[in-house]
Structure formats: structure tokens, C-alpha cells
Amino acid sequence: MAVPARRLCHVAFHVPAGQPLARDLQRHFGFQPLAAREADGWRQLALRSGDAVFLVNEGAGPAEPLYGLDPRHAVPSATNLCFEVTDAGAAARALAARGCTVQVPPVNVRDAQGAATYAVIGSPAGNLSLTLLERAGFRGPFLPGFAPVASAPGPGWVSHVDHLTLACTPGSTPALMRWFHDCLDFRHLPLSPGEDPELGLEVSAGPGGGGLRITALRAPPSCTVPTLVFAESLPGGTDEPDQVEKFLARHRGPGLQHVGLYTPNIMRAAEGVVGAGGRLLTPPEAYYQQPGKERQILAAGHEPRLLARQGILLDGEEGQFLLQVFTKSLFAEDTFFLELIQRQGATGFGQGNIRALWQSVQEQAARSRKD
Image (cartoon, rainbow, N blue to C red):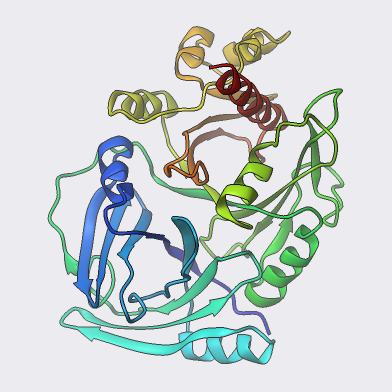
């Protein structure tokens, strides 16, 4: 039987010693230190922004880092999703019975604030593993074994994780969807009326061909788990690889491409990130000059000039609008990035915005070749 994930505890990253991810999350994106642990060659730092928690595992110790494992991946990467479950031991046994690989058998960790049990299973999504966590009754700010870190209140730009997007090889999405459905009880979330879950939503990049196929899954209504989004490239297009193809090449395979962070005020958040030194992706100039775009932005209650200044995309109609802005990669390898997203009644991901992101990546790559 499937093991429902009750909520997302954190997203974990693995980086080499000295890699500035933890510093950049604090300086540029408003994350604040929550708890830390140093042992066995690892420096583990949990950072929080609203309810979004990132765990940065830095180093490469002889033993596995607490609450995860070292995938020994070739490049820095977002490597683990930690989900809370009712019973971690029973969950691990149930998934093992389904043929899943239990990479770390159930482990119990206890300190003065309480106890937690976790297990780690492999997933078919590249180097991404899943930690199943049981921590009922734990009273600390993060997890047993971590020391709390005192920090000032954050700027409040982000409230929670909205979605998690996986970059997939062409044709792999249906098998991934079945795995997450059968093992963790995720269900298909249609992004367009009458959408076939086997085909997903195709977003064409334009008359030249290419574009993206995106498919989404959501957890049962009783669970507070972000939407899972699978993205794969469509055939055709230009000789220049799109963002999914680039990720697959530079990441050395499939994996977590970006995390969508929900913000109640995307203008404030974008201004804060840029003011703190964060780098946002610039959409093509023609985006804001599309027929009807100014009217659409005004209908959503925003000022076109201000959105253009921060590179914020807007899509939607009839009172349901979606605003998005994307950061540049957080790693030198140009792989993982963040997204700031604000929803005004919209539940999807904005076909026009996906197309604009695709085009902006292509245009920036073309400019880079000329420089």
C-alpha cells in the first residue's frame, strides 16, 4: 500500500566544503539559521524562511549525514526531500515490500527535546532520495541531534514551499508519476481541462518547435505537501539546449531543478532579493509588449512598469492570476534555481510564463555566445 506523506519537513542539499550556498541563502534570499550540527566530517545547517526549510549538508564525512545520505553526486545538488509520515518504520517496510530500495534503515535519534525516527529510500528521480520522518512529540525547533541557532527575525519574503520541480529525461514522466502515486499516494493534478496524465501539458516554445511538457501531482487533501511538477523537453526547437536539457547535462542526470517559494507580496520579495544582491532571470523585452499584456497586468491590480523593472511574469484571466520570477542558478554549474511565486486565485503554472522563461533562457544563452 502507499505511504501518504503528511507534510514536507525540509529540502536537503549536498555541497562540498566551502561552497557558499548556506551563506547565499541568508544574504540574498532572506533565510535565517534555524539549527546546526557538526560531526563526522559534516557541517549541517538548517535554514528557514517562513515554513520553508532548507538543510545544507556541507563536506563529505566517513558516515552518512544525519537524516539523509551522501549520494556522492558529481556536482552540488538538491538531493533529498524529507517528508513526515505517521510511522517511519512501518512506512519503510511497506515501501520495501513494493520493491523500493531502503538506503538507510529506520534510525532513532533522541536528545533533550525529544525523539525522531527516520528512514531513507531511493527514488527513480535521478539522485533524489526521500527521507521518511516520524517526530511526533519532538519539542525542538528542527530535529533531534541539532543545536538551535539564535537569529534575528527574517524579512518575511516567503511563507512556504509552493511546488517542487523535477527535470526529467524525455519520456520518463509517466513512470515517475506512477511511482509517486503507488508509493506516496500522489494524485494527478490537471493543468488544463481534460488533460491526459500520460501526456501532461505541452507548452510550445513557438513556431520553430521545442518547448516543455509539464505534469503535476498533488498529495491527498489532508496532507500539506507541495505540488510535484515533472518537466521534460519536447522534441524540435533550436540547436541551443533549453533549460531542462541544460540541467540534465550540467547536473549529470535528472534531479530537482527548482523549488517554488510562495510569497504573499512578490514585488516586495523581488525588490528585497535584488537589493540583497540576489540575481533574477530577465524575461525577454517583448514579454511586456505582447498584445493584451498591459491590460492583463492592470486587470490583476498591478503596474506594468513595476513588474517589468523586477522581471516579474504575470499570466491568467478572469480574476485568476499567477505572478512568478525566477532566480539565476545558485550553483556555478548553472543547475538548481529558486522561483518566487504569488497566486491570485490561479492553481496552475502559467503557460505563457513557461514559454517566456524558455525564451529568456534561450535569449540569454545567445547573448552569452556573442560576448
